[in-house]
Every structure is written in structure tokens, then in C-alpha cells.
Length: 289
Image 1 (cartoon, helix red, strand yellow):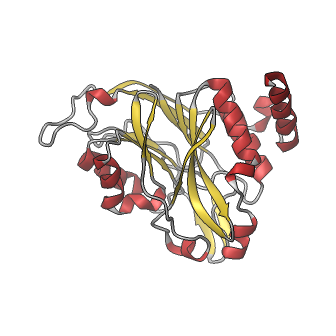
Image 2 (cartoon, helix red, strand yellow):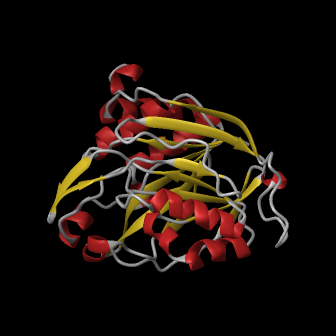
């Protein structure tokens, strides 16, 4: 089973552009399971709850979710994306696990970071584990890593791989995630973003150090600071994750490392935009019906 992450710079507030960018990155199958950054469809640095709510979406009615479902059908994969989720009068900083049949699960971020508390409602869903392909996976979002209980809960529930959409700004975050993987003997795939956004308290720059971590706490390579970046890895959960206490994982728990930089420009897919994506999806639906 090959897992991967996508690191890129979303355009704040431009959902159609971000959908097209994601499509450009994922049009060709790169992995069985791909992780996108936190709030990948809207951008991150909202000024207040009013602005965040205005850009939130019901995932059951979201064009971006339609795009991701179509990509999952086309490529036979699963995608995890950060998402500004609207539910009634509330909005949540969420992660969606999506497959070819639609949304598999929604996780709402429990540990809101800094000004996120002014923009989102704290998560009210439990940390759950799902069997995807050959692995048991769980989701958490960005600052959740700071609290040992989050990953520990997923590990005790049988997770072998932690999927971690992120918008990291603190320089020690990647190292902290490696410690969590070592503590719990699990893999993790963390997708960060790049770029700077202007918000209510000035500019915020994201560190862009996406990574895939082994149960040994080893990350073979990090995403670059400023570039769009795509990384893939083929771990074997049976050869390392969730070993009995006191027995270290085998050294061959990471196999077939293949990480490469990609030029994630819309020109690569013929100038894809939101409207052309809608036409393509509708054409695909008509062909399937």
C-alpha cells in the first residue's frame, strides 16, 4: 500500500481555484492514500468566525468533495483533506476521509490552535479508526499532535497509520510528530502547506515541512519550505507498526521510498478551473448513468 502527501499553497477564499489545483496534483494516481493539508479548500487565516462561516461548506453539497470523489473513482484511491465544514449554524475545522463511494468519515479538530478558537467550534466527534486497504488508519489535525492523548487514543484503538492534515507554523512540529510515532509505534503521514497569509493579527507563514514518519520516529525526507511538493512511501504496517511493548520495530518497516518534487501549476492540466471541472464531472456522471 502506497501512501503520500501533497504540499501546496491554497489561495485564500478561492474554493474553485483550490479545487482545480488539487485536481492538477491528483489527476494521475500517485498513491493508494493521499493526504492534503488542513483547510486545503479555503485557506487558513480567517479574521473571525463570520468570515470563516461564510467560506464554510456542507460536505454533502460541496463541489470540492465531488471533485475528490471523482478522482477516487478514477484512480482507485482514498483522499484525506482538511475542510471548513458547515453544520447548521456552526463550522468546524475538519478532515474528510473520502473514497470512491463518497465520504467515509469526518473528524472535527478537537484542539484548536491560537486564533482558531475565534473562528471554529471545537470538535465533537470521537477519534475513530478505519480499515483502508491493508492498513488501519486514524485522523487527527495539526495541533492535535501536541497532546499525547490524541495519537495514543488512536493507537489503542488499533491504528497503524495516522493521517495528519496540517498548517504548521511552529518550527518544532515535525520533530514532535516523530516522537509521537515512536511512543505509539505507528506510521504517520503529515501534509503541511506553504506560503504566507494575511490575517487579523498580521502575516502568518507556514513551514511546509510535510513528512511521512515510521514507527522508529524516522522521517526519510521532509517537504521543502517554499515549494509545492508531493511525496510517496510504501510502508508495510505488518513489519513495524504496533509491535508489542519493549520490542522495537524491524528496521525494514520502510520500503521503496520515492519522493519527488512536482510543479503544481494549473497549466499542467490545460488550464483547469472550477467551471471546466464541473463540466468534466457532469460528463463523467452521464457516462456512468
